[in-house]
Structure formats: C-alpha cells, structure tokens
Length: 55
Image 1 (cartoon, one colour):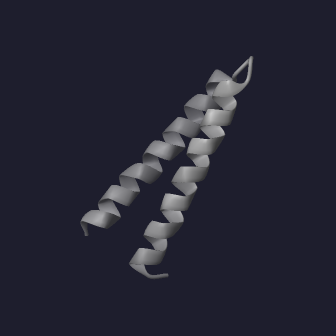
Image 2 (cartoon, one colour):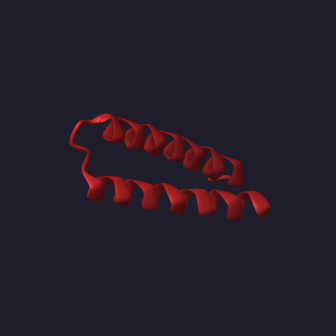
Image 3 (cartoon, rainbow, N blue to C red):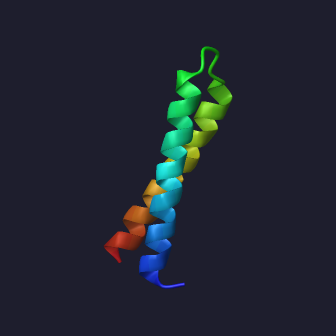
C-alpha cells in the first residue's frame, strides 16, 4: 500500500471513530470505559497520521 493510501485509510478510521464517540456520548447512559477506549484508539491513529504526513 502506498503512503497516501495508508494516510487515507487512517483518516477514514479516524473519522469513523469520531462518529462512534459522538454516538456514544449522545446515549443517556454513555459507557465511560468504551468512550475512553475509543478516544485512545482515535488518538493513536491521529499520532500515526501526523507521523506519516511529516515523512
């Protein structure tokens, strides 16, 4: 996979995680552990995106 392809794939995953986080936060009884997991996963993807874009 090309560098640009990987960046596109990660950007898509980042966007989807953002949507999942928003959906979870809208629930009346949001699961704090699930939110924490999703946010950590999103942050790791963001860090990788920044690293790839810098190279």
